[in-house]
Image 1 (cartoon, rainbow, N blue to C red):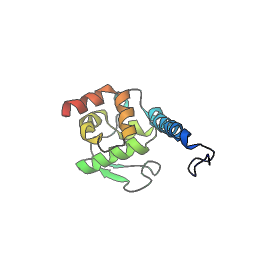
Image 2 (image 1 turned 180 degrees about the vertical axis):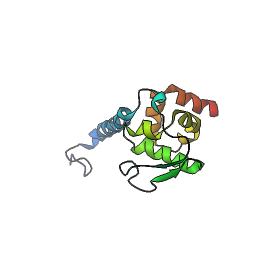
Image 3 (image 1 turned 60 degrees about the vertical axis):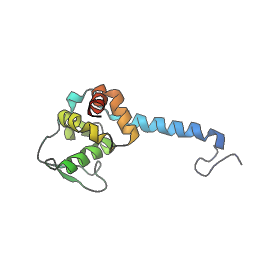
Length: 130
């Protein structure tokens, strides 16, 4: 048979192409959400932040920025689920740069690579912290 249950009509030898195409679409989803510059990220640096349901659709919705674990969780959630307009509202440039060496280990490989490719200063922070 020349098809698989996951990809009807796709020959097994074509699966690597289908996976590559899926990965490219996944990367593009995150790339399109990026701000033009990290300077656009003017979100809060203190207080309590409540994320809207389209960002925090599962799990916590309220985060206390004075608590490092909650702050990290907020940034992880927004990086993965936030839309383009959400990023400047909920992320702060200085906090992102400060947290990136650890945060980059908590986000998916695709999110990490898209952000580090777009903003070399994030990759530089990670290298400096290593």
